Length: 130
Image 1 (cartoon, rainbow, N blue to C red):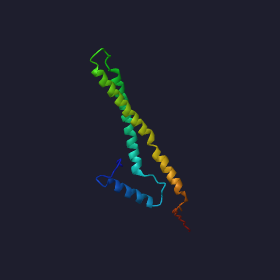
Image 2: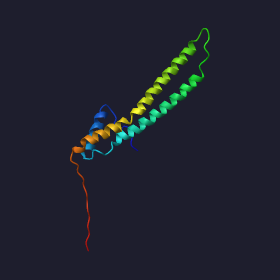
Image 3: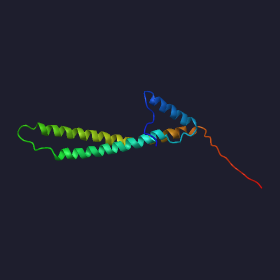
Image 4: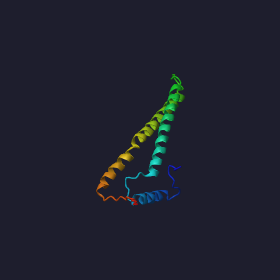
């Protein structure tokens, strides 16, 4: 199984970059970057789960806010602030989730810009005669 980001340590980004340069050096720029694809899937799933769980917490806190009274509303204020914080964090996750697909759009645009480069293909034919 491919890990989301198989490179570890202080030079992990450099290793990932070198691996990607090697992959593109093989000539097929349209080939998918497996590391980025795996990381994208893990990130997308984490953002979906996080947003969903945050929404559940928002509802729970919203249903358990005590009634406002003439005095001593500290607990109400704390819960309302917490509810606001949850909403902001959920919105950040949802925004990040909606922007994750931009990678594929940007990648497609970049590949289109490289379409002027010569392409190489290898074909093999076999013939037999009797």
